[in-house]
Amino acid sequence: MEEHRQSWKRGMLWCAENGKTTSSVKQINALILISATSVMRRNPFGMDICCRKGSRSPLQELYNPTQLSNTAILHQIRRDQVTDTCRANSVLSRKRRVLTPNDLKHLVVDEDHEMIYCYVPKVACTNWKRVMMVLTGRGKYSDPMEIPANEAHVSSNLKTLNQYSIPEINHRLKNYMKFLFVREPFERLVSAYRNKFTQKYNTSFHKRYGTKIVRRQRKNATQEALRKGDDVKFEEFVAYLIDPHTQREEPFNEHWQTVYSLCHPCHIHYDLIGKYETLEEDSNYILQLAGVGNYLKFPTYAKSTRTTDEMTTEFFQNISSEHQTQLYEVYKLDFLMFNYSVPSYLKLE
Image 1 (spheres, one colour):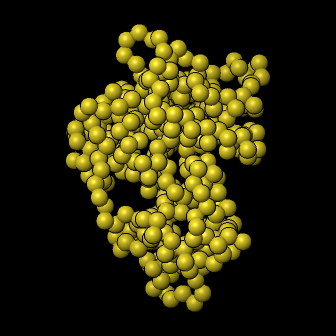
Image 2: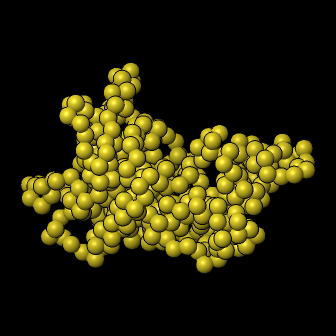
Image 3: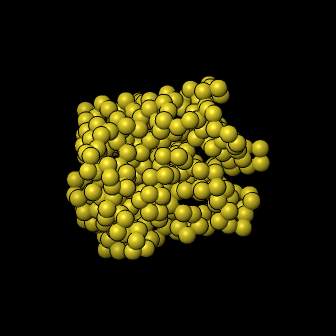
């Protein structure tokens, strides 16, 4: 563990700008930063992806020019959208940036199939963690849906990228297929609110965040509300998110943190960007690339409590245009990066 800590310290010395490094830094075996200009390419690693003998890795399958399909083209378009957004926002593409261990804790590693999955809460991450547990063999299950939801979120059941040394991280970022799943930002936000603040069993969230929100956003709050924090209104939640003091105190909780901040797509090249709206197709395409599509399918089932676009529209009806505009600015990069249009129900100023 100490060796890893020292390795991270050395890695923090490495920076990049416009995809280039100084001669002295090139000697450091730490490439934690993947700059937007150097990774956003159609064949991003210069690998011999078409002619390797033996079984192909998922990354080789994806970039195999002889296997160009409509699905592959769709994912190229999604990658290009991320690239264009990163380049259009100088604060993202030109700013020097070093990724730390904390930045990599959402990247789940599958050694056997050479894949890395960045999980985003409220975007089917429970089922994808179940699938990753089956793929990595870190459990007694062969069927993802046999895995209890709470077990899928036990950190020791999956290995994340921050647990590796710098050279090991570099190797995996270069050679493994990296993917994530995204969702319409405000639908994801409403889903997080409904799950964490309207369910009575989430007492830890009520205590941790609900009491803070009530104390800060509600005038004349009762002592019971201040003590329990179990009746947070959506309007209060939005006011909490747009309050500048909130992120000055601490980063957003992962359930409402932006995808940009969780997965760092301007610094880590994602080969596949799945969408919640096409969850089944995108998920099974990934499993097909991993060579397991014949015996493992992504679990799908109709969830009656799922947050829909209609629900999201209803939740935003009582949000003022001023607060809608401020909230959109918080999540604007996620809208742009993953090609989600401004919702028609918004009244932006």
